[in-house]
Length: 438
Image (tube, rainbow, N blue to C red; front, side, top):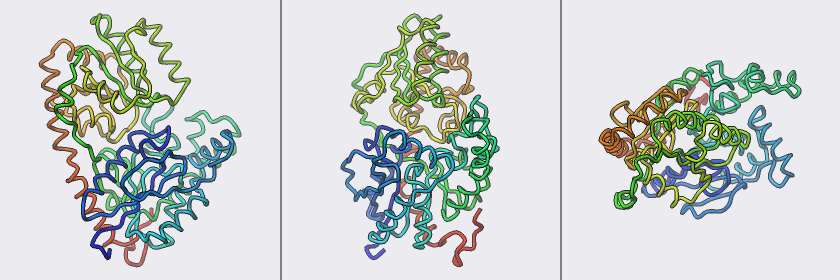
């Protein structure tokens, strides 16, 4: 730290605009890096996968190769599946990262999503004696599906093991997959043992990490950064009080099927209710399922399917929406779209699951309902459509709460304190810090 700044190397699969498959985690990572760039206490750089479209970040960016890069698509998918399910190693990315670490000499390494680059990079940091920490955005480290929910929508607290074969319906060479999944926990735990601190986005997520077996002294909750919108921009767009907005991946865990069912109930009462879906393509079979269900329910003509849009269009549709719905079907820690909707003063209906209740206080900043109940979602949306003053009050409260919860300066200050604590503590299991290694 010759310059007085802490040199931080951020390592992540992707960043926004760098891949077709980026989402809330990448947005949260990018915003943290941008906020750190504005301080005079942290000097960030970024390592990312070569599966990117270059974007100007304003910080040094170095691209790493991976085993699957350049292979035919079928083989690329096989390797990515193998890394995600059983073998979280990529020696090619690991060696390239090691060379970069030796050149840049960071004081610490801040890991983010790693299912593409792999956990080999954590091992390389350990070998070089560089302290590291890991932001946790989903549960891939403890569940091959990343959600800690079974395929039939029930919470799972067994974590990964042989039961994952039956849960996910893996039938090909099931006997071999049982053996591999039986080894998964040991393989993954060994590779994340060098992590000094785990940084979930919510207290609910921190509880899940403790339930898995990560010691509480190695967990620090770090909220996401959130740039507040320009008030003039938001207020200049006319609001359609009967337009309901859904934003998320076209995946079952995001709960669009629950929203479609709720719309079917709602439209019996409100002839002018409509739903706008900004859903990034992901699961083609799931998209076919929800579209077919909308036809059966007779609400297909009430839905506008926009898919992936520009940030400008997304901002306009967010501002115009009368109701914002969050129907997560998994233990999401802190959905980025939830924070953005709160910041924009939207009346929100959200499922009571994961970290959401830490941010939305029922009847104060929004309406919370059972996460898997279309009837309750429809009932809450009906209340907002029938009572504009309630919608306005909840939206105003949500905006004020967002300003209080997600102050970038405070988040960066908290992050800096965690960095300093890590540098003082040394590596887990090292002579300087004989902390248990899980």
